Length: 373
Image 1 (cartoon, rainbow, N blue to C red):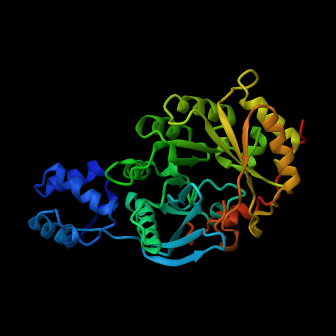
Image 2 (image 1 turned 90 degrees about the vertical axis):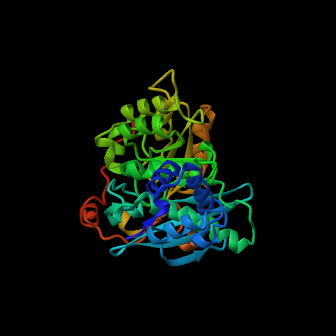
């Protein structure tokens, strides 16, 4: 059985080459061929010794994930469905903009967190992706887009770990993948342009701040524990006060001086002006725990199993106005790829659920709302 070299960061590839009797500089050359040039044929790697190329052909490969489907939106967004075996498939999305190209990458086949408003969560969880399966999404997207655009310039400038799965629940595979993205011999992405999104796995946030600090986005979605318990079940383990304290600890190491709070706007659930005022109480230092942050308000993308609706635009704008007037940087995410189900929260893939999520979540379609006080 050959080894897929997409599984390794540079240190891992150096260790692999050492087992073949090769020095580290050979691993660096190989790493550049794979990630900077998108090469998968060892014979094409012309500055490697022929003896090394022959060794590699016998024990290694560079293999992308099989592509099940590709859909291109009218706005230029591209969504790929990748086969990860055993009946599981994951999705990745490329979002082109004037000043950047962003790739949204999956970290798990499904997700065990079970957020009420997320299509992936309703599918349940099958397994973690390997480092190679995470990196393969970037490797394929970057080099296939270069071919399509007939360009040798880098196409993907930003990566967001916001696809299927909770990245910090797949920590051991995530960190080497991030190191490949950041490595100057690989994709050379800035730490400020690689974002890990989490629903709030507090212990792993602390570990990431030391092991590989990149930009952090936290899926908040509610201003109080009773409501967040209902929308983001992980809150029962790591409640809001504990989560905000972890955000402040992370900021001591982060490449940006703020945390992004993602907030999905749900009609009549978490979108009232009083909810915005409660958020201000949480994040303003003179009032609550306090954390330097910006809010990214996300229009909900409805799907039947959720039992939820999108907040009207005027309600979203009124909510944003309250936050902005309190001095909090607030943006409303522009929806992209709606016509190909590529927008935030819509990635569903195909998952062999081992957690019976659909059955469990069907029983929770009604959210019991406490009066806003």
